[in-house]
Length: 221
Length: 87
Image 1 (tube, rainbow over the protein chains, first blue to last red):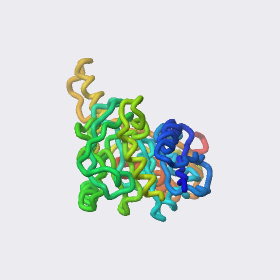
Image 2: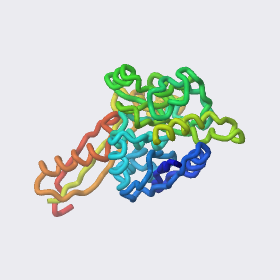
Image 3: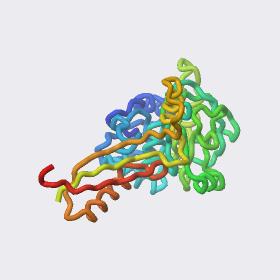
Image 4: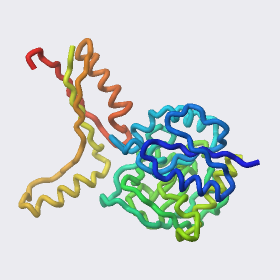
């Protein structure tokens, strides 16, 4: 049976079709979900793609968190279903309170767009079950506000509960503890700044993103 | 009553402010050698109808908590002033 995975689209999202293509490549059926829908239908997993939801006005994700669809997304997450936020999607998940901490402007104040090496820090979450701890992926980053920050108590909690999912090998943006991806307490909600959907075809230089979508699909089954 | 509201949103002291740091680095080139601790924030102004200034302040605080600032990285300061009829 093919599994349907929703891709949430806000005004200003711009990675939704790349995510759909990546999901198709691993055998899922992608379904675009518009931001003012309140019913997620038969989707078994969700991706919140990158872009500039609502123009990133005020702060990235600040307006998107009040979209009608977010009530359904929060319920879906609380029910333990897999949710992956990529880049702007990660920012939206922190603003919505599904993930702790925040993403501030890159140290160095530059928009960074290039492949970065990340290492997998845990297999215990919905996007890394098909990967080994310590394995290295080359994934593109493309952001201005990707500098992950949180207070010390939150960082201690993330470390203690094995919730840091990926770390940059050469911290490009100043993220605390080189964090590139984190999970929530029950490990079903993950936010990551790198773009795995842009690394799913040899033509794009890397297929390192595929195991992330395969893991997500596995978790959605 | 009508109130004029000013909300200033600033990065917490512990949060790096690359915009402020960039401005600070640029100033000596213009001959301003004595400026330090530059921080860049946002000023948000709006009008508000409320029964009294206490209620106005409570509403503004709620708006700050829910939308205007992210308490993980930002602090807010609020100024609420009644608008005089002659204004």
